[in-house]
Length: 414
Image 1: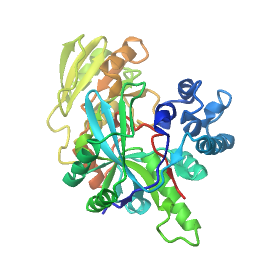
Image 2 (image 1 turned 180 degrees about the vertical axis):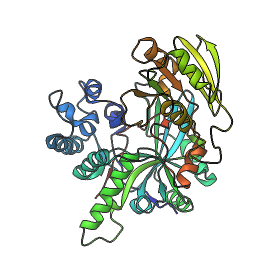
Image 3 (image 1 turned 120 degrees about the horizontal axis):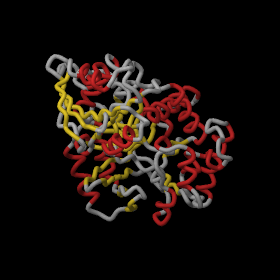
Image 4 (image 1 turned 30 degrees about the horizontal axis):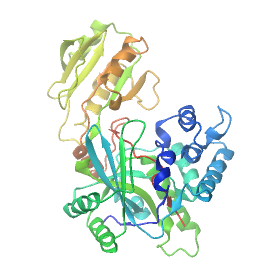
């Protein structure tokens, strides 16, 4: 059963939250972070992207950069830009995008649940990325940014969300990207106890987004336990910060592909090869969006096409075989275009659906790319099924939006 607990959040005073809050470290590069933080000494980028405090081009993995993160974190607390709550609390965090709001509980999740597989993953992690985040957690002795969890719907927890969010929020603002962020603080001891009890009935939590941060946070906690001869099991480092959303609140958006060349084929030859496994229909110049599972949208030579996978080319009984990312990776990218490693092949790039299909058209029309492929998005049910069966999704399968805003709450490990 999932074990979570309340914690003493370290967070900005209400009037400073918009100054401190930032996008997550991994959705922008150093130059973009430098531009966003320009003129704002309170921006969390000074802690999560501290290379912006050095000359442009400074290696973000330089030891002095990690040291600056620690220095800045201490300074933020000294200046009163981040203040620790007086007691352990839970928080409810809401995100609003395109008129739709999702509500999650900000909790401290148990490291052992990750290590023993009760916090389930659906993606592989890269050791170099884990190690970078581990250094950041280790050196700050804190989870500066939360990870993004989903859990099976629970009516009692939904009732708590409804009750709490009927009250006045602590933070309520719209970020520069247009997404709304609202946070409520739960102080009531009985409600805090009920939240812990309800989570204790949930068999598994699922990592929606933030596999590297989850791995890093859990591994640092396990490392601290191993290195502490007085370890008892109730220390704060046995927990890491997450925002856990009911699965029905979340919507996965499409994650699309653009490819630089047709592997030596003409456009006509490429379309002929596609027709072996797909029903190919020309749709004209207006953007065509995939209509459902196993239907794809192709942009090539100034025209949009509908591609519908023929019966027998996919396996709906297989949690991985049913995915359109598998169908397209095998039958188009591998078999026709010769792209076998989605992680490293420089001929392919990936575009989150948040940018819209117009972005695919633009990248092909500009001559940078030769063709674009839009996929029908994965569902939360598919993600949970994959995690429950111990499978791993192919790379670049899911895109969650909006991203969690960093800097609303920090969790110290002592």
